[in-house]
Length: 61
Image (tube, rainbow, N blue to C red; front, side, top):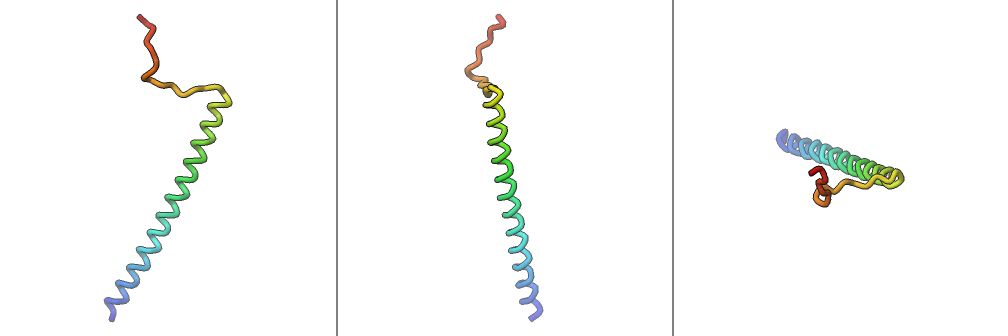
C-alpha cells in the first residue's frame, strides 16, 4: 500500500515538473521570437542590411 502512494506521488511530481518545464519553453520561445522581430524591424528602419559573406567580394588586391 505504501509503495502505491509513492508511485502516485512521483507521477504527480513529474507531471507538474513537466508542465512547468513546457511552460517555460513556450514563454522563452515567444520572448525570443518577439525580440527577433523587433531587431529585424530596427535593422530595416535604420537601413542596415544583413551581411552575406558568400556574395561579398574581396577588393583589397
